[in-house]
Structures are given as structure tokens and as C-alpha cells.
Image (tube, rainbow over the protein chains, first blue to last red):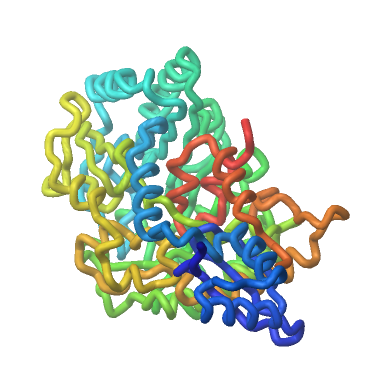
Amino acid sequence: MVKESRFNLFYDVEEESKFLAYNSRTGALALMKKDDYHVFQNMKNKNFTQLSEAEEKLINDMKEGGYLIDDSIDELQLIKYEQNRAKFNSRSLGLTIAPTLGCNFRCVYCYQKDHDDYSKMSEITQDHLLSFISREINNINSLSITWYGGEPLLALDVIENLSLKLIELCKQNNVAYSATLVTNGYLLNKKIVETLKKSNIEFMQVTLDGCEETHNEKRFLVGNQPTFRKILENLSEIINDFRNISLRVNTDKKNKDEVFKIFDILKEYELYGKIIPYLAYVEPINNTYDESNCLSIEEFTKISNNFQDEARKAIVNSNIMSRYPSARLNYCGADLCNSYVIDPNGNLYKCWSDIGRDEYCVGDLEHGVTKYKQILKYSMYDVINDKECTDCKILPLCAGGCPRRRVDGIVDRCSELKVNLESYLRKVMEFRKNNKTNEGCQTNIFESCI
Amino acid sequence: MEYLVKPIEIEESRAACNSSRFHDSCPDHCWGQICKPRMDPA
């Protein structure tokens, strides 16, 4: 016996007399003739009994995409099982390391503190970090590092020193090593890029918040000096030596009307098509930014959707599939057992927004995890006990939303996909219809970025 | 049913991913840039 999945969504494709059928748990997407859709509805009324041969065939077709499932399966329990499997998988170790919390910027929305403390991670703490990872190295098959801050390039020597040792440690133990960097971009130059490449950093994120005047009002140096031109000049200098750079545009009510000018700015600095801009949502984390400046998720999503379409035009061989919505088994490092954020003193946290705040600390490098309050709050949340979430047809796509927002009691924490899923799936439909191979199969789902 | 995306494609891309950390917890806006390198089979 079968039953209908609770995560089916059907969108009318009127011009083809079909429905676009999507299942948010399996990620299946299919075009279904309207006649078949009506047969399906009729079968539901008969509780999938006394079926004709044609109905049996349709059932088998729909089972492949998970639109119909074995009626003994509780899909919510299945989601819980898959999420737990991901959350408590200890084969990957993910560390976000702040080699300093000092920063040369004073961004208006920054949620951190201790920017005036320019001390770097000491050699003793670096040794503790290496010991911490060494204790895990035999249990993992990949180590992912994100260099973070403060401004991490203020402690480039720490990044280089630790990277070389970690790369060697991973090599000796046959563990895959990867690293990324989050920087404000002010200090970037060719020489620094050489060090970053030597440190196996393969991707970096830089931020630019709109046009010159707005950016400089939001992201200025300690002494209030502007940063806009310097960042763009630096990116122009390094772009041929370091190609994997994304440009984050923190978006709120103050710059929402000018974010599209970013494309002209990139053209002016010959960065268009080389650096990929994306919009990020500004939120009042740790009550450090006036909430009245922030957009709602819905407002933000509408702007972000159009921005993505524009950004995609800049990329040769762009592929909409890179952002295809599929089940999210966990939300972020906060709800994973083997993921930590580390401050320069060797304190451990679970969320980037928690760094430097004692009340959120979960332990330290020397002693490991000793405080479980935050860990339990972030990791043990059971989405199937949340009525609003279990009633939602796209629950598998968001895993219950940002753990930190959840803990803080923020109501507006639903995924952007709640707003833009249908329009995105319609774009995928057009893309896939136009990219069929001779065998009727489609192009590889993630074959090119964007 | 004319399938445009089959579940097996998603499972394969997940299996090819080096690190579950970024693929499964890819930030909404990363555009695959953070997780993309891990989607390519080593």
C-alpha cells in the first residue's frame, strides 16, 4: 500500500496542460500531464485500492520521485533520522578559526565585540589547536577550515603557520584538507595572495555594500576613513591570481535600492564576470544594529531573486542548478557535533555570532567541550515537535531554520524558499527542458557553478 | 511523469561531496561557491 507524501507541491503549467510536481524531501521534479494528475486525485479518493493497470503504472512512476511512499513510513520520523545521521556524523571536522578578533573596520552592523583587541592567537594556543585536531585526525576523513575574525589578514602569520602544519598533518593521515577565508578585502595584495595560496585557501569572501557613498557609511576604517576604492583596487590587483572570490553585499533598507549598481561598479573595475556578487540579509544579531533598518525575509527575497538573475547573466556557462533546492540535513555548523568556532584565546563556540561572548562558550582547545548548554540548545532541537514546521510543505529544505535565531526566539526565520520556490522551480523547468541530451537525460545537476 | 530532476541525481551529488559540512549546511547565499569544490569527485 502507498500514501501521498506530505511534501508534494504541484504548480500549474497552463500552456502545456501539465503540472510541475516537486517533492521537497527527495528533490524530485517532474512534469505531470493534467489527465494523470486527475487520475492521481481519483486514486487518492479510493485510498489507492482497486487500481487499473494504467493507475498501477502511474503509481510506480510517482514512487520513483517519492511523491507516493510506502504507507508504513512516517515521513517526519524519516526526516528526523536523516537529520540526526548528518548532525552526529563525525567523519568531517569543520573549524572556523579567528586568529585575531581585532579589526581595522568599524562596520555599523557588526555583531562582534573586542575589535580593539589586536592580539593574535599565541603560539601556545596554536599548539593547543594542533593537539585538538591531532586527537581527532584518526577519526575523520576531511578537515575544513574557515579563517575568520575580526579581520583574519591582520594575523596572516598565524594563518600561514597553522595552515602549513595542518596541511602536513592531513597529508600524513590521508585526510582531505580545504580552507576558505572571510575578509574585508582592505589588506589584499599580490604578496598576501601568494601566502593564501601556499596556505591552500581556495575560496574567499569579500564584502562591498553598494555604491561608494553608502558603502563608506557602512564599512569604514577605525578612524572613519573610506574603504570602497581600496577594496575594489585590491580585487583588481589580485583577480588574475585568485579567481574564487565572491562579493557579499549586506542588504538592508538603506542600500536596497542601489544594490543593482554593483554590476556597473564591477564593470568599471574590470571585475564583472570574474567575481560573483550575492546579497546577504542584515539582521540585528546580538542587538547591535537597529532592527528598523532591516528588511523582512520576504522583502529581502524579492530583491535577492532579481539580483541572482542579473548576476547569472555575467557568468559564462551559468547553471541555475547549482542552487537547486534539496533536503537540508542540518542547518549549519551550530547543529553539527563536529564543528566549532575558535577564538584567538582557544575558546570554543558553536555559532559565528557567538564568538567572543562568554555566555555562549562551550569549552576550550585544551580541555575540549566542557559546557553543554549551547550545544544542547543548537543540536537537540527536534523539528518534528514544531507544529508550524511540520505543517510546512518545504520543511525538508530548511531543517527548521537558523539555530541561533530559533534560540533567540526570532519568529521571522523561515527560508527564502518559502517565498521564491515556485519561481525558481519554473526556471529549472525551462533550463532542464532546454538542456536534454540525446538519451533524454539532463545535464549533470551541479556541473557548473551558478 | 516526465522527470526533470530525479532523486538519484541529488544523492549522487551528495555522495561525491568531500565534506558533509558545507554541502549540507551551505549558506543560503553562497551560490554553491563554498560547497561547489566539494561536489567534484576527488
